[in-house]
Image 1 (cartoon, rainbow, N blue to C red):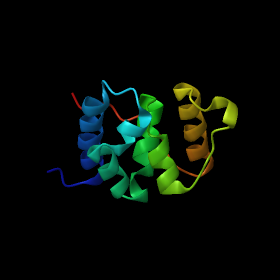
Image 2: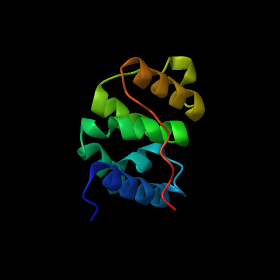
Image 3: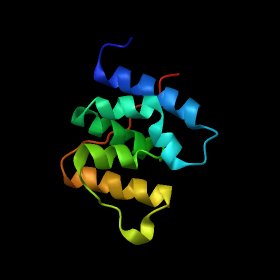
Image 4: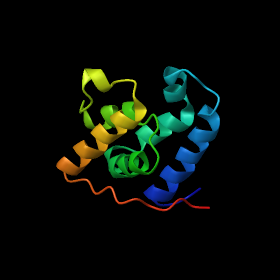
Length: 106
């Protein structure tokens, strides 16, 4: 099992992407053990989630809301993944999170 936070996050994120690939329900996606394990990593994972959103928008919004308590997405943009991702990335920058894109492990 990877030792550092970033490696653990990447492992879990890749697992979650594989497991959620054919799910249409965001609730089911968020209930997957891999997603829940990412949340369990705690607030230290927020910069990694923001980086992932910047690199490839996906359904990390609930995890970010749980970890930060923030709600930066206006009602009219809810359900629009790319716009929601931009709102979260902008929120992260405004709150001092670096969202430098990390190359994917291949």
